[in-house]
Amino acid sequence: MDSVSSDLLDISYSDEAPVLIAGSSELALARARRGIEASGRRVGSSTLIPDAAERIEQQVSASAIWLEIDEDLGGPMDDLLGLISSDVAAGRYSAVVSTTIGLIDPVLAPIAASDVDLLIDAGDGERAAALALATSRGPGMLRVSDIASDNSSLRLRQLSDEVNRIAATLARLSSTAPVASVAVTTSAVSGEVPDIAPESVRSVIRARRLRSRFFDEELFADPAWDMLLDLLQAELSHLRVPVSSLCIAAAVPATTALRWLKTMVDQGLFVRRADPHDGRRVFVELAPDTSNALHRYFAEVERTAVI
Image 1 (cartoon, helix red, strand yellow):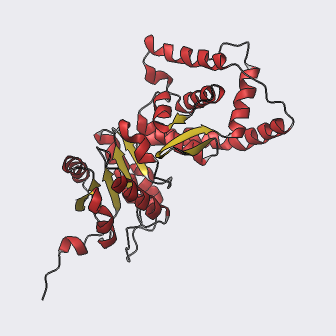
Image 2 (tube, one colour; image 1 turned 90 degrees about the vertical axis):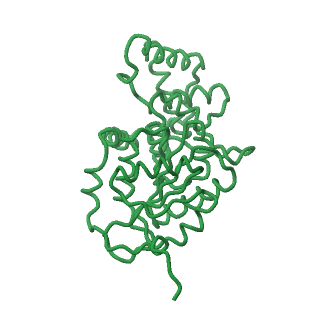
Image 3 (cartoon, helix red, strand yellow; image 1 turned 90 degrees about the horizontal axis):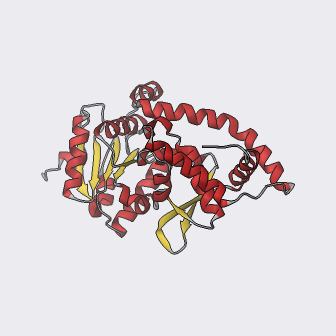
């Protein structure tokens, strides 16, 4: 009788399905494997990106897919990211994509699913937190047996302090969004949106950046506002802002900036636009209501020093 690889069938008496790893290089695979094993999770298999799509289809069960990218592989990478995005959106499994800040634009462009966790130059603690969240959320690819019926409490216990802080702040933003949206829409229809000078916005941005010369910049972390200001300045100057540039403008670690960006898009405050000349780049711009609200805000505080 022909022998069958236990790795392929992934037969295990454990309740925990393994994590499947795909990477852009052997070095990337090794780094992902070390992190996953250090977190106490089981690695089902690891494969290079060009072979990963076929391996995912063969996998019987997986608690999550971890994709480690340390170099741009072009088409094969784009195809795999598109597949993973579709599968995550369909609920087949959870996924974490870890990459470097220099690869944000080509990595993010094919990802449409908002539930794909993105890590940028992440440390060990952040990687462990992302893995814990992904494995607690995912149903297990092609899994027949039911896993824990109540994942909510497990998920909450595994979130890092940073994620909890962001979630609380975004909840406050969400609770006020409907009121702001109605007010802005009414103003836009009546033609009352005031003009503002680009220099007014630039001066606010410069003043905010100057604070880091005198105080620890982490004291003033406010990525949502910094991104709003950067996009408004770009709009007034008729410039387009790629995701990588917006993450820099947020003045926080890139992974944190991406979380905020994703939430702002989900809430309808920002809009993602594909670059018509480069399919591997995405621009971000203010939604019309957001732009109107910022114009009204600057008109209200025109004579006030705002930093």
